[in-house]
Length: 108
Image (tube, rainbow, N blue to C red):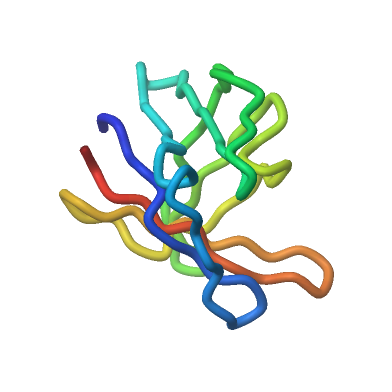
């Protein structure tokens, strides 16, 4: 699936401001089981590259397609609904407690 760079997101219905250095944040799907992630905070700090295992969850009659990310997830979130997946755009939706949002990625 390739390498995807952060381009935007929402949190509880409001657009999240993405700082320039945060657009260096990426997901790279390495194999059918492993992805690599590097996330930059708004102050440009990063914990460096991390490898995570993931599972695609197929849509059923009652559930949407999703992505399960193990080993710490993305921003600590491990379960995502596929909001959109095209050749160039990936939108991962999340919800938990009183928080809902999306993370928007564009393919390199």
